[in-house]
Image 1: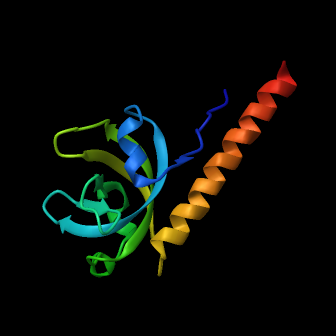
Image 2: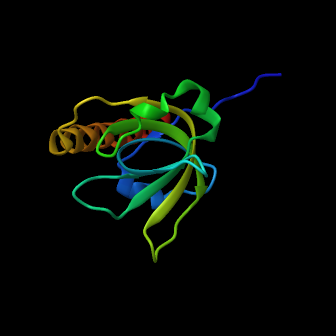
Length: 133
């Protein structure tokens, strides 16, 4: 029996709230806080504080250096949408399965490149559908 593990969908943080619960996603966010008691990182895209991703890192704690989780640091996250949306607070909850430091980020450049990649993937999907017809 084959076990299929779905690939993650690369998205900007502000698109997380439109994803269904259980969807595997990959996104980039900047740490705005860490709740030690709940092992939850609050990630945003500065200068905005909303939308926010509250990322449960309990599954990856053993691979993290808690000292590296500083406000203002950028991280890549792969995880599953745990709570689809909370429109009043603008918070999406994500269960992380992988998390790593993104290094120094130029948010405007990253967003431009990400937008270009998403548009290219959409064009490829359209082309693939035309070929299959």
